[in-house]
Amino acid sequence: MNKISHDAFILCCLLLIATNFGYYSKWKQAQTEATLSWDVSGYYLYLPAAFIYKDLKQLAFFPEIQKKYNPGPEMGQAFKHPSGNYVLKYPMGQALQMLPWFTIAHVLAKPLGYEADGFSRPYQAAISWGSLLIAFLGLWYLRRILLLFFSDIAVAAALICIGFGSNYLEYSAITGAMTHNWLFTLYAVLIFTTIRFYERPSFAGAALIGLCIGWAGLTRPTEIITALIPVLWGLHAFADIRVRGMFFLKNASKLCLAVCIAAAVLFLQALYWKYVAGDWIVYSYQDQGFSWLHPHLRDVLVSAKAGWFVYSPLMLLVIPGFFALRKQQPAIFPAILFICLLCLYITAAWDIWWYGGSLGQRALVQSYPLWAFALAALTEWVIKKTGRIVLFGLFALSGIYLNLWWTHQAHHGGLFLPEQMNTPYVLKILGRLDVDRMEATKLLDVREAFTGSERKDILELAHTDFEKDSVFVTTDRPICGTKSAVLRKDHEYVNAYSTDINLEQWQQYQWVRTSLRFRCEGREDVAWKMTQFTIRFWDQNDKVIKEQILRLQRHVQGNEEKQLFFDTRIPKKPFRKVQVFCWAAGSDFPVVIDDMQVELFKE
Image (tube, rainbow, N blue to C red; front, top):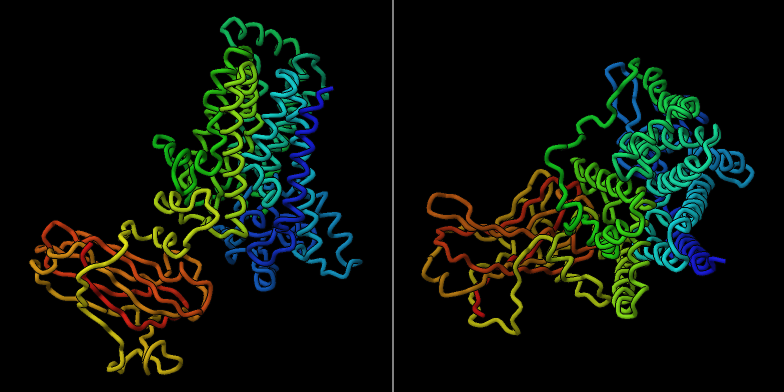
């Protein structure tokens, strides 16, 4: 019975297992790629602080952890409160969900030959594997929920779309220790319990509803909106409001229990703040907040940086899916649509709308159990006609391929560059397995490129080899000749070309090519600190009218030598001065440069 959706559930679980154990085992990685790194380490830090080091106030143990495991920025997951104590940035709900897996790891760490310090391999593995089990539970509940409303094949399609065709794969199988996977399961359990509660009200059901709402809010404060699920579920007409009110009055004691449990769970955070800071309420996100009147909706949906439909294109199906859901399930449609749109609005209102190194919009993943209704409803409509099935199948397969491709590029493929993506770069690489990485990577900075087969009438304007320089040069492993220039913090600029120009001469050409050879004496991963190779055009009023920048460290992994060039179309607007230079931009790693060249050419 319901074999197709059962098989789809098994396939999704097998994909998660294969991804977690066979493709990218985050629990085997080190430093900032480990399971307990970046935001995860911030959510998790309550556990070692409370149970291993007995130090929730000063976190004096963390510098040693930072030195040994490098889970992220030093003390970046906590801030110093005016009380003199450190307050953890993230709420404790995720830590409480991790507590059973932390306990298992702590008991086994020393017997297995590892340090019981909260960050050694057993802790990494236990949290990762626990997250995987939570994902299975969430998918299992999602299947049970959808089968109450849709056919077996429609439920199977929805599960495949979520598991194979969305960034749920990334945030359950690989970075599953982040909150989104766990909240996905809380959403699914809450929806299922809500449905059962309206069928047969019970104190146990009310208690579980309260627990889910409180725990979700304690994990991410904005998830307090999960309270709308039991409140709005099944309301589709004004007449239903009166009936719902009578239901609430009849079951007031049960509802009171749900509210009390949710409040008690949320109160745990206030107790922590009072203990470490002396205040019942602390805004631990500091300078981060919401722009409620100016949400970044377009960016959240379609931007190259982190657009939901760019990195999970199959989720575009939710748009027609809601039209199908309205016809098929009018009783639950209003609540689902409203809560989904509210989730989208809150996600878009957050000032850091790209959510760090998010692969698409990770902040929507937890609400996928609601969006899945639209996917199932669309499938229900599609399967009625063969032509629809073919189109749906082709789009679904394309979406699944792109999702798997993006997931690969975020890890082993290397084409996904967090927080750096732009439209020209995405269009250059999208879906491709054979990419000219150097030319593609240039598009992260340079928006123009000469694509002709041959340059004509080349005119060299400048060629700087630093052989006659005596300041800020190195004779130790020069790139060319006997000397190369060195960019570092005490010498941030090197000029290749800066002069007033003969405008008539320049306007005989269409392009200018700037090139150099360079070597980085260390790996610089922070984009804004990367050395900038720049061309700049100035008008008669000393105003910059055009500029192009190429960040050198994007093109190397370490300290290998490389030659780079980029082409710039000469402005049609009159200009009087051109400058070509390199700027160190504050990097801690010196950059050796040589053989800087400026050339004009025609198409």
